[in-house]
Amino acid sequence: MQTNFTAEQLADSATRESNTILRTCVHCGFCTATCPTFQLLGDELDSPRGRIYLIKDMLESGRPATEEVVRHVDRCLSCLSCMTTCPSGVNYMHLVDHARHYIEQTYQRPFGERLLRRVLAMVLPKPGRFRLVLRGAALARPFTALLPAGTFRTRVRAMLKLAPKRLPAPDPMQDAQTHRAIGEKRGRVALLTGCAQQVLNPGINAATIRLLTRMGIEVVIPRGQGCCGALTHHMGQAGQAMDSARANLRAWSREMEKGGLDAVVINASGCGTTVKDYGFMFRDEKPKWKDKAEQVAALAMDITEVLARFNYAPTRPAPGLTVAYHSACSLQHGQKITALPKQLLARAGFTVKEPAEGHLCCGSAGTYNLMQPEIAGQLKERKLANLNRTGAQLVAAGNIGCLTQLGDGALPTAHTVELLDWMAGGPEPAAIAQARHAT
Ligand code: SF4
Ligand code: SF4
Image (tube, rainbow, N blue to C red; front, side, top):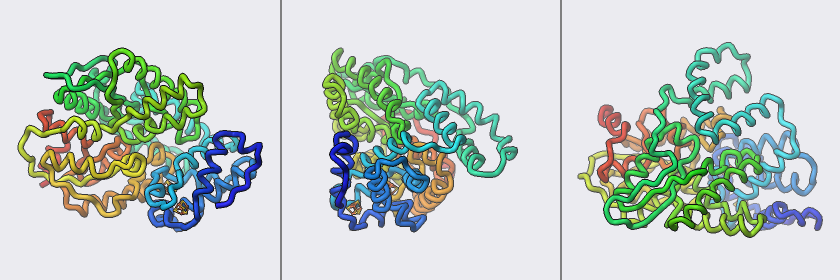
């Protein structure tokens, strides 16, 4: 694709990067076939190629983002399915991230929307605040009918629907500490305990810690780590995202200096994609930060990668259960991890099925299901129908967002690591009893 940026525009590193990305696009349109929003809406401007043109025009013009550009970029899930399909290697992720940041700086959203985005950015990355809000959500649920009809009510309802009816108690295993390896020590890792995940399902971190320590791996929960920055990064709030990432870099670097780390383990794939991209995020920072970011990005591993590296092996007999594996977009498109989770589940003794349209997003996509509830709802129904058609007894996935989105479907859901931990001697996840009860 030809671009027409001025030398002055190209002096800006983000624009320079976007220019390189735009020039790799040959407008073949292959990406449209696998884009969920194009599949649903059928509008070229809601396809990757259409958005690329819109972003190119917006950036080249140097003018503030228009309502039209914002509408179509906002509808993008950042599922990155287009990156898997693209034969030219267009880095749509970096391009749309730049577009979102540009929009945030040049476009004045309506008041209600600004408020909502501000609240989400303040609440979601902070587990304490998030817990309080979820408690409040349970009380607020009956009163949504009193809100005037419109986008705001639809969004509030979507949020309340996603809020769990009963919140699990906080698990002290997730607090800053070192969990010693059991038996001979084979490695030492830091575990990112995340933000929303540790509130919605602390059992995922607990399963990760139990399983790794039983495998002889010391698990450190570093003091000072927090949200990976993905939630605010995808809302275009680069400053807050960088602050979150910087806090993590400090925390993990301290641990590297203290006792060395074999990996920074991440069990929410949305976070994993972002941490693996820290090197790019910090490319223009001082060497002190740039080097740390590159070091951490190289150490970042999804839990399934760590389990494979340390030769996960089950200790229980095969459970005689069929699992439908839902491949989170951030895992399959963002990190290109596709076969590993299925192989580990099969090694653990499960029969593994894959749903049709496995490449399509379930509609969760960070805060997408809160900001775009109609499209997210349609994608969710489509995903649930495909999962049900597998004939499986439960669903496994490696990302808390997907598990929350699909959690009220006909099939019980569990994180992949909860199932692997159970088959290697851990406690039985709640989803197993539900699956057995239903069959
Ligand atoms: S598939 Fe790649 S090269 Fe083709 S239009 Fe889409 S982004 Fe551009
Ligand atoms: S990231 Fe997903 S929704 Fe956005 S353009 Fe690419 S395929 Fe479409």
